[in-house]
Image (tube, rainbow, N blue to C red):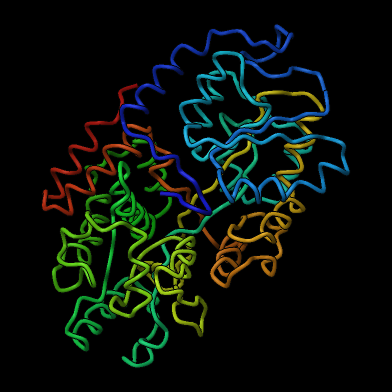
Length: 449
């Protein structure tokens, strides 16, 4: 799940199915760009008119900050960037492309959706300037999410780091415990805190309206990557191994060693089943008041912690709450999961190419991050521009050449799985459905070729 710093549009399965039906009829439509040799699809095929339209999922205050991030560049380059944000981006972008009303640039929150549009010849190959920026400023892992069949079609934009374990430094000091460096050490930490307090150490909330269950998928993805490694993770995402593979079952079982144990959850809320009824943001309140010792959530969680309605906790190494990355099986592991966006062009005119190049640059990354609330994996980003200690820490992780980064698996899977059966499967699992049955059900939903 991506919120605040990494945005996944939360669509019910029916909407995702409708989206697939829309796309199935798009490939044969001709564009309206005036050049019959251009890839199928709408958009300006060659006229630079000083206006570049951008469409994405970023809305409200963050949309205002996005527009502010390029305001000076707009004036200096005499290009009017017109941004439109929509919570219905994932369905509307296909409809607009088919109907000849696509934007010049789209900000895609899911690589799977981006790749699907590329496969239907709607997306233009990345211009040379964009390709150069991606080569210089982004890791191979990140570049791969904007690449289809060996060709670069877009560029990464913002990012989030998932898999943080949030805790109270003061409580750790009181209990005489330290940040774990391996998964086994974290399990020992869990047992120690439970023994010292006589209460469950962990709290979790899977509640998110129609998207209830997504925080559980983040847990599983972390464990697949850390236990089975990036190669198995990649095969899982592509369905080269099924959900019923032992590696995936092992990840579920490891997560269950915490989330399915009544001695370990659900601090401040109730029993194991209360995880499903607890809104994920409400966890910040019990972390802030000290009734929960540990929770698993992405880098955006600091915003919830610092919200006055949740207790206005401070975040930092010596503050009320701090965080460490979910440890790997072996000490020193550097694998992390996360999310982000891909900027892709429907048009190939000079103005569009110029804006896309700017958005792929370190200059833009520094401009946006300095405004607060988000981060980027661009190598040229100065961590000092980040607005909070956890964002600064996240940038260091993303920029570390030893970090193995993998995009959120459910965002890479077909929507009916990643934003459907995987989410509902997590809910069923918390409610007591056996792991093997859950995995069989999820795997059976994978669309046939």
